Length: 60
Image (cartoon, rainbow, N blue to C red; front, side):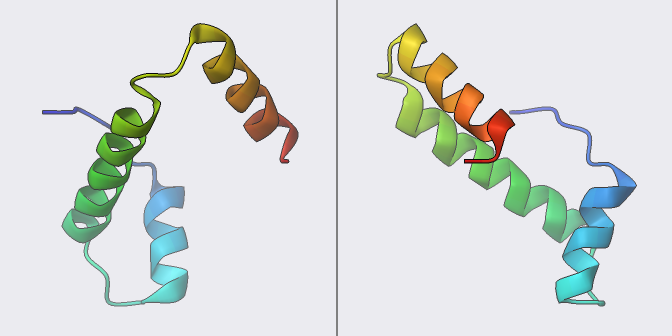
């Protein structure tokens, strides 16, 4: 189980696409996305993870 906190901005972003989306649906989608990402990067080196984090921070 992954514990995560979704801000009001997360729900607002989802509702900009679908005004009827529930907080539970947003939470479930984010949780699945995080798990999939963790599986993808499980074999990455620390350097690869840092490089990817830097690219995300720069908006690349």
